[in-house]
Image 1 (tube, helix red, strand yellow):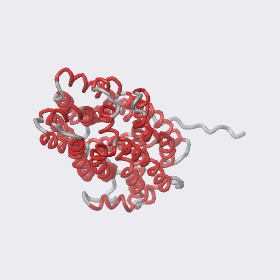
Image 2: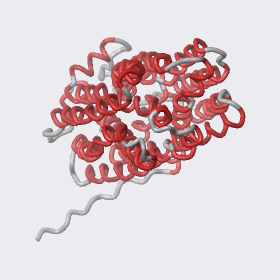
Image 3: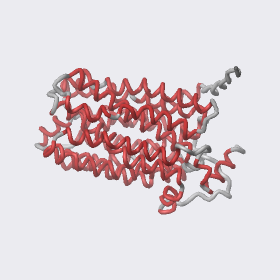
Image 4: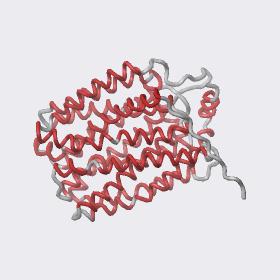
Amino acid sequence: MQPRKEIPAPPPISPAGWALLLLLVAASVLFVMDRQALAILKSTISKEFGTNNGDYGLLVTAYLLPYTIGYLFSGQLIDRWGTSRCAVIFLAGMSTATVACGLAHNFHEMVAAQVLLGLSESGIVPSIMVMVTRHYPAERRGFVLTMFQALQSIGPVITPPAVAVITLAYGWRYSFLVPGLMSFGLALVWFLSDSPSPPAPVSPAIKIPGIGFQSVKLLFTSPALRGVLLVRMITDPAWFFLIYWQAAFLQERAGWSLADLGRWIWLPPAAAAVVNIVTGIASDRHLRKGGDAPKARLIALQRIALLTPCFAIAPFVTSNKVLVLLMLALCYVMANVWLTMVNVLVTEVAPKGMVGTVYGILSALGGVCSFIFNYAAGPLVDHLGYSTVFVFCACLYPVGLWILRIHYGDIKNPPMLHHPMADNATTEASKL
């Protein structure tokens, strides 16, 4: 009997590392609060402005379209100019847009505010991804990103009850004004905390594509990046549909009140927080045992995809509040952990110094599918009902899992090493 192989202990996270993580979490919490407030107040705002599901789909698209287009450039700008400049500008824009939502007097002003919000928020997550890649080693990155995802779940956990309480006490406008003003304060903290140094020192021999077509071309010429690109394009629509339509589904199909949402809708993100941490620890442990990074993340994605059928079940159990909440919680856990682990994979297959660029473009192309799907969701719900849309979402993740297996399932070495630019970046990073 061979002795059991000892798994090396992961490198510790310093106090400064934990402080940075909390800063990133705060940015993400406000990001989530800004976006989720619109979904929770969907029925309230519809009554205020006399709009229908089709108009709400347009309102969502007004956010997602500039959000998607902004991703094409935000990551590249961050890689070139650094987070100390760009992240502060994006946070300030997010604050301005959120306050503008609270001050909107008609549907068209709300649309304009959502356009600015989408454009500004397109730079928040790439900034976070660059900071994580820059400050944490690969052996801890799965834990850091899943811990980040878990902690930022404070946003979707506290937003429903907070929005419900604020709206019932002071009116729906304050549900935008409060987080908007808080975002201004966070922008100042980020400005004072972030180093103005370049995000990733690289050798002059490493040719980093400029802002534009060459960076997009990289995603299609690298098999590793093409895999995560296709997965994001296919599965992102289901996640965005869940974010924007979950509350409306419970109100319109299951008969929930705003008070019911405030009381219970925090449970899905709370459950996702716990599962994210467990998944990240397990995935990093597999990596330290000697497995390669893509396979470690693929195993986690295969396991979480077992919850996919919950999407198809949810619209058929609306008569039971406990059961429909359970199904939606499992849907949320599945979609949230899936996206988190795909993002971990992005940090490992992207060339060094281009994480923001790659993540931004991936999110942009995934966002194209998301805003098209969410724009169509309004008419689909009106004419075919929620059941058709939920069942369709249930079909997306098995396709994504099939694509992941094709690109990463049988590869012994991390596929990023097969791209010439990644070869140079990896060699240079080993010297730092």
